[in-house]
Image 1 (cartoon, rainbow, N blue to C red):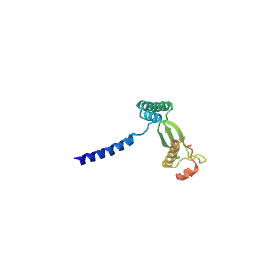
Image 2 (image 1 turned 60 degrees about the horizontal axis):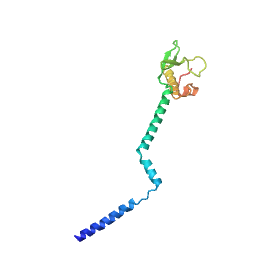
Image 3 (image 1 turned 90 degrees about the horizontal axis):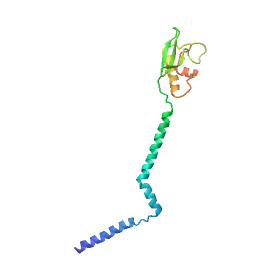
Length: 148
């Protein structure tokens, strides 16, 4: 029995000593204030309210910016049995009406509906990406557009 009591006493003295060393941290006034600031729910709530207010302000600014929505489409038409052209619409409004092959001198029409459609698609891609929609001779060559 005394042996068990001695073991318990030795165990408790080492156990107590390990906790007492951890608890002996010295708190300065600055450490206390920093701890209180980090764990204060009122300050945390105020910071969250400020973040929400900033997001709300940004959203209200975005609502004042005009939004541009719509679809761009093309229609190719047979022009007086001489060839094809294309028209590009934005929100059902005509933006471009191309009756001849761009860049080519004269009044040469597209020979096929596919040629007119491919050039119209390139113009639409450029417009959607904010690029000048004009077509170059090299782009016509890359699309294999038939030119007389």
